[in-house]
Length: 313
Image 1: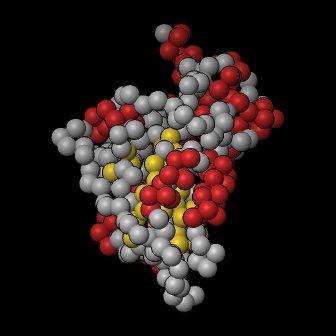
Image 2: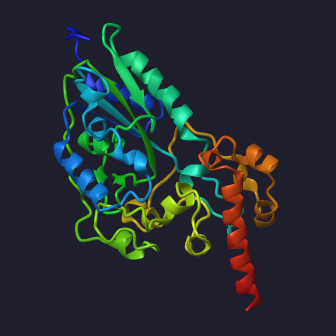
């Protein structure tokens, strides 16, 4: 793939199209190796903060150098989507992270990003899209593209909060303007660190997965019962986001790209009586589906027993 001579992307036009497609924010970063971000990542790996997620040890160079994923990559377009919805789960005992309250975002966002790419990338140019679908560090590129900054909870936030999913377009087409890296604006605030129920944020801007309830209820294939009892949610954990001042005045996006999940209507008893067939019906189109019925049901059973024990004392 050689050097191409095409008209550069009009960054302002790219952003306008992204917003029209329902994305909350869009930025364009100049493609380059992110040496400092890679160094921070490798230090976290060396300290064991990734628990048993060994896949994070692979293809480290590709995470921070888009040229490793798309030869001659010149630009990285980053889009964010705010997944907050008006509807809330009917079950107060068996809550899940907010991103599961909408349909699995991977396919829905990929279709929107593909639509954006079709409109902005010249036919002579090459591109590649990602939505959690490659090893690229999308959060670091979101910061590079100026659509948000890193919070001390390791997540990206901006004036609209932090309840976002994101994706990228890598292209060998240059842009007429590049956005700037955005520094953290957390200041002295450490609410996420102090309120984390697992004490997984003792080092600011780094999550220790060995402690994090989100890791144990999503990625860990066999968490112990004590962890499941202690976790505030049966899937994921939103505590560090819920307490963040940036999320105090958030509102649902005007354009609803993602549909609300069917399981939100389930009451406590219905969650407890969930069969494998029910799981496929109510959770099949959500991010929870990848966890499979047996693991999800076990988390509910452990939590149910804890609730009964408390009610009997």
